[in-house]
Length: 322
Picture 1 (spheres, one colour):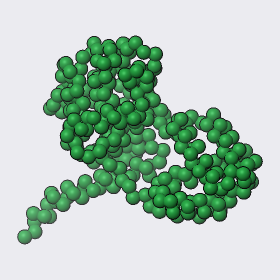
Picture 2 (cartoon, one colour):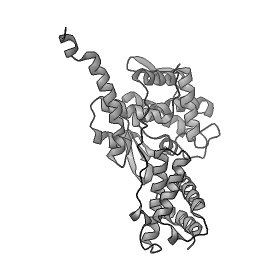
Picture 3 (cartoon, rainbow, N blue to C red):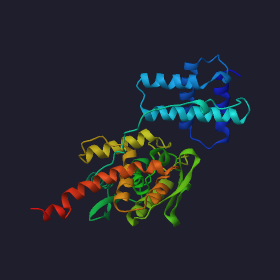
Picture 4 (cartoon, rainbow, N blue to C red):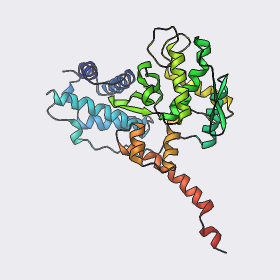
């Protein structure tokens, strides 16, 4: 079997039996086609060797790919080889003989400060007119629960989106894929379709957030559009991840926050604050939907920096020394 044929059949076969997103399919196709171009599409699947893989990763390093990007590409190739190993097209995985050193991933999660997060939520609340909903001493939201037009719905949608991302820590892609039926009002919980087909529940525990999400759902169900999406755009179609990013960006500018803010930073922020407040890391792992505790442990570095900073300011030994 030729390598290009193997890639094509893998993409159609693997993704027909695995619950993976369209975004994941696109990423797998891009990485495998890149490898196929390097190895030579006309070569056989059986000719993919440890040497070819090591030479490919060496080229990726020369081209300036980060360790994180290289790791992702290697993982995709491992899944590809394992697929054909299970189907008998490969007698052994070439990765059994591969030795790779891809370098350390130094990037730590970027989180908002407590004040920045508070200002972002407050700005979202100010964008929504009518009756006020207090949150921690300030007016967070002003909502017209009877708003049924797309124009009147938009401000409530934007508030509900920002509030939901922070309340549940869900990824922006997970928020975009939510449908109306995924919000169980009785349990104040969202059914989240996570990465790798790992579904979980996202619970809303703040009563003000519950009110915001309930009012958004009520306004959303009154809209006259065919989409089943929970968040919709001005055309009545599912609100895209880029549309959500634009909403966060506008709130950031209006709130006077100087640095760039992405939807994913709200996820980082709530995870960091949970750890700072003493929540067990296993609980945070479940909350974020991480498959591995190692992924969650990245946030402990940020929490430790905060701890050290507080100790340097307030440790009693600083006042006991002359």
